[in-house]
Length: 204
Ligand SMILES: [Zn+2]
Image (cartoon, rainbow, N blue to C red; front, top):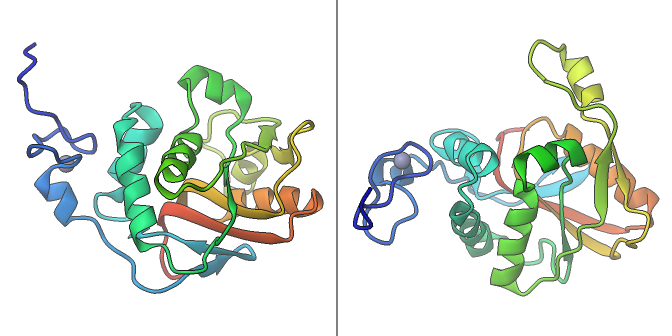
């Protein structure tokens, strides 16, 4: 191992250019979304990228390989394009991960993303949701069982949710997790609610 080895792309392992968080190929294969927030599960959600091209590799790198320097690059992409007024004056709330999985992984990627976004925008962060219940392996489950296996999301007992929330997640696909978070926040009295993710499935 040499200290002079060039950094490797966290999404694909290729060499990155000097000072670049991603290799040139992955940068070119980011599929930028245009347009404003889309409503998913009753919540206006905005994401800079389509969950296609190199985005799934980046999301996996943040989630499973602990490429935490990526959180800041991803937060920069979110902060640079977020539409005016979306989540204005809101407190950032990371989408929770169940405590067993968080212990095994050592971190929740949505927390890292929310923290990086907070550092960039000055918005406060409140980790006020928790996930409980069963969360076994997802492989081989039917869709319905998978949704049940997500467990239950609820507001933490000793943290009152802020009145104006911008939920933060790495990726929004089915919207099931977002819906569970929205239910918990609304039940806890939150009236203004929007969400950002790094990538989402387009055209929902
Ligand atoms: Zn790459």
